[in-house]
Length: 614
Image (cartoon, rainbow, N blue to C red):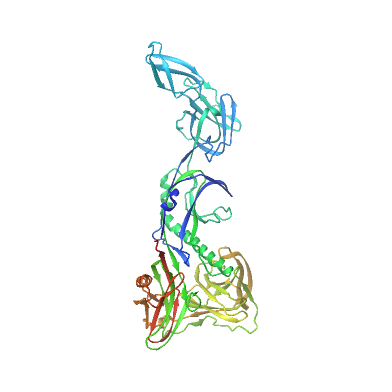
C-alpha cells in the first residue's frame, strides 16, 4: 500500500502562503493530509523505511502589495507631498519592481517619419494615433512609451534620505537588492523632472519573498493548529535560502528521518485507539482510515516542490483464541506429554481480502532445557498482610533502581504486586540508568495481567529476548495499562524507588517523588541457554505446508519467514477445512507437532499485510 505525491497532487508545487501566528510570531504554512487506509482491522501500521522516498525544494514567490489577493499587504501608505508616496510594511521585504498604471499623464515626445511632435495628455491609451502635417491623410500608430523612472529612498524614522538608493524604469526589475520596511517613492519623466505622484498612479508594487527557515514536519490533525504542540520537523534549512544546493543535505536524510517520525505518530495513534476502546469498556476497534498532517512551514511566503512515496503495511500481532469469544493473547503456551506425534495449535486471524507481505514467528521450546533460576538476591517472600507499596495506575509510574553485583543473562522478571481492580494489566519496563535517573535506553518492555484483586503474588514476565546485563545500574519501571495495583515494598538501606506521573505520550514525567531506603519486591531470573539442545523435536505446519524452524541467537526458534508468508497466503486463497470463518475474515491454525515431552511458548506472530483493492 503506497501514498505518493499524486495522492496529494496540490503538494507537488504548492504555494506556502497561509499566515499562522505562533509563539515566535507570524509565519506561513500549508497543510496536506496523508491518508492511511486500514480496512478497519489492523493492530498497527508499519512504514516501509527502506522504500520511503522524500525530496523537497523551495523557490521564491512574487506578490503585488497592492493586490487584495496578496497574503502580504502594505501596512500603511501616505502621500508625504504631491510628489512623494511613503510605503510602510509589516516587516522588511525585498522590493522587486514598481509599475505605473497605463492612464498615467504627462508630457511625451513622439517621433513619426522625419518629424518630431510633442503632446500633453491627461490620459493615454495603449497606443497613440498620430497624423503628420507633412503627410496629409497619413495616419500611423506607434507604441505608447511613458519613459517614467521610479526612485526608491530609504527612510530614517519620518525623514526621507536625500539621495535615492535605487532608480528603476517602470515595470523593470530592480538591478540591486532593496530590502526595507519603510521607503519613499518618487517618479521622474524622460527628461528627469519630478512629476506628481500618488498611490493611485501605481499599478503594482511587487516584492519577492525567498523561503526563510523552510521546514517540513508531521502532526496529528487534532494538534496541527496547536501552539503548544509543534509538528515533528524532519526536514529543515535555516535562514533565508537562495542556493538550491542547500537542499541536498536535508534531502539525503529526509527519508530516514520521516520514516522514524511517521512510525512514532502512527504507533501513538494506534495506541490511542486501543486506550479509548479500553477506557470505554468497548472492544478494540480501528477506523477505516487514519489521517496525519504533512506540514510545510516557512517564515516567508514561497513555493515548495515536494515529491514523496510512502509504502506501508498493516500489522496483525496477536494470537486469536477461538474458544474465548474471539479474544486475543500476546503469547500462548503449548504443553506436550511425550505422546507420539502429539499436536496442538495457535491461531491467527486475517481479513479475507488480505495479502501477507511478511511474517515473523518465534517460539521458545523447553525440551530438556533447564528452567530459569533466580539471580542476585533471589526471591524474597512477601509477608502475609503486607500493604505497604507504591500505587501504580494508568497515569502513574513507579521506578525501582537496580544495582547488579555481577553480570547475568536476564530471561524473566518477577514483581511483587497486588491488583486493586479487575482487570489490571501492567507494563513492565527495564531501562538503562542515565546519571542516576530512569531515562536511559529501553532494554525490555513486556505486559502481564494480574490475578483477582487483593491477592499478593509475584507476577512473572518472560522477556521476548534474553538480555546480557553487564553494567551495574538499571531501572525497573511499572505502570498500569488498565486498572490499578500496589507494587509492594519493604525497607532496604541504600535502595530507592521513584513515583512519577505519566506524560501524555506514556513516558515518565521529569517531576518525580523519591522514596529512599525503600525497595519494591522483585526478582530477576536467568537461564543457561548453553545447556539447551541445538535442535528441537518440533514441527510446524500451516495449511498443509511444513515450515522450517531454525535456532536464533537468543536461543529461541524462528520460523522461516518466506515459507510462512507463502503458506498463509495459500490459506487465504483456498482455505482448508480446519480454518475458521469469522465476520472479519479467516482464522488460520499454526499447528505444532512434538514427539517428546516438553513445553513450547509461542510468541505473538508479527504479520504485515496489504488489502486487495477490488
